[in-house]
Image (tube, rainbow over all chains, first blue to last red; front, side, top):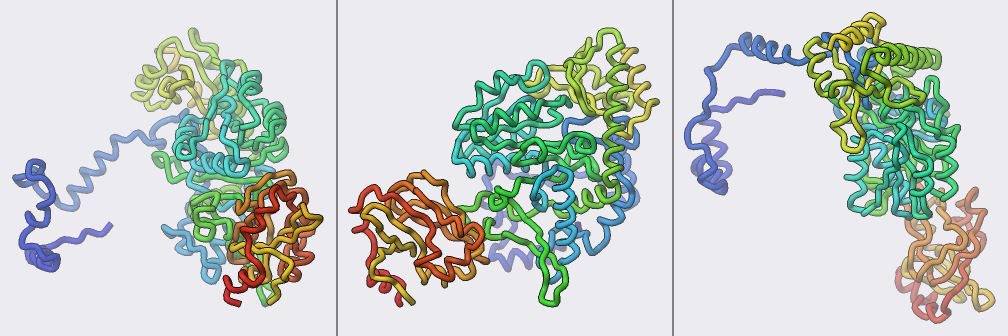
Length: 444
Length: 127
């Protein structure tokens, strides 16, 4: 950001232009008693070099992933990002704060969106994907809004443990519509099917399941699909795109809407954002999809061209009758995901997924051999699992963080999700790192 | 522009033709289709849906806009024009014939008195 200094003379000129005689007059609406009477107590000015040095030393207080071993997950994962991703997305043709959608000037961007949409459809087994949304949470909230609008019903059933942060966003978005969001039990670490049966009614707009779920466990999506559609509700599946390297794509088990957090696809953790919301549906919902869609057409010279399409769904045309009020996408993150998927290919994605599966099972086995530690749930899992610990997870976090190991998420910070340590293992974790983690746990 | 005398019209540009004193055939007027331009999609209601007079029963999508479709009378929707699913342009070509949209079982014939005659409708749109 540019620094624009101003002199006493400049200030006088500005005050004059506004039509006040002094700065005090300008702020006369602010109550006297809360105004600062004396000068700000600032330290003496520093030279540019001194400022840089100071900021550097402050930034070194951060524990970053070049200097720590992370087993954190819960929706944001430390996957490897090939260098080509950043090289391509930083090209000046793409690197912009605002996605330019005009077909006349943006064929490259529109084609990238089109390729992204095509890849997401292939990955999820769905018919149509949008140009992306803000993140997994907002994508789920939009999916729920779509279901409420499409079915004209008012109940939302959350089957099994779904990311609690996503549910907070869902509640925020659906609050003005007074939707009734119901949660099923998940005592065994997955959706309690009997409880789900009792909670789905003919007023249920949609059933939401996360696969793998928030604890990393694999849900019986086939059974949940049957129950959902038997009452005419829409079936929404929240996915981890990496898991689709080895898991059955939701399109093949009857999902009507698939959403997901796309951060795993070549996007850095960066303190929680910007991330990427994946959103895909079956064809019958094409006119209800939120956000942008890029389409391919033939121009008058017979050349292939790209343009935004089906825009009559959107807020600026349908106004208050639109099913969604979002008219943008997460352009640069979408491009990162596209480059990542293109680089990895089908085989690469399968290898990443297989490594996550194998390594997480190795670590789970080692940890469960430690006295007092055991796996909380006896369920098949993908790359995350919950461990029951002999001392509170918050204490473990504190102790291991000092040794530059981030041991996982303390589940007790989410109400209703029980306690324990949620541990994620990506393809980046080596045997040495995992063995070190196990040794540290043993010595607690 | 044609506005047949035997039809009744809404201010929202739908027409209704009464058959057998109980069934209403509903479409949009020639004026409406020319204002919308090329029609690319019609969102048809479920058969069996019950609507109230001037309640929306579906939408009609042209290249640049989408408009709601309003029921001229209250009743139950008993048939939809299946041909519109693959050929929505029938509404542009033949708005009062092949371009009909739904058939509705009229609940109360008196509601027809709330609708416009061909002459009133012409006045409304200034044609």
